[in-house]
Length: 97
Image (cartoon, rainbow, N blue to C red; front, side, top):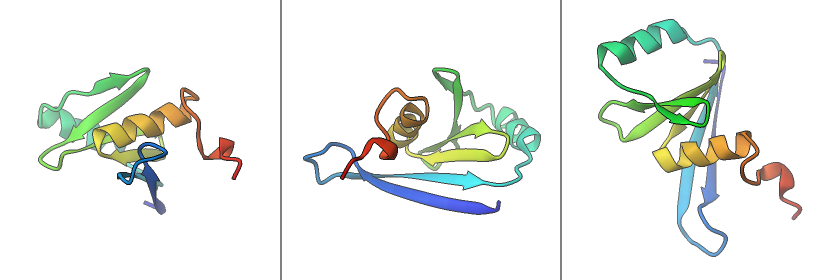
């Protein structure tokens, strides 16, 4: 892993509730990781064309968005991050203030 970033954001504009999503970038042995998921019999859920895998016993999920980038966190946080990435919802780039 070369870079690791976390984003903390409000789930709704008027809410005090915060959610966290992590993004890791670098060289991952995806074949080994996916083989380990298969060994643990973990099944991916599809969010559009993105495969989201549960991380055993942590309550978190992970999605490999490309060969060198993974997004991880709670299910809702990862789904919202994928929504922003896929253009389904607004992202930081549309935040005028």
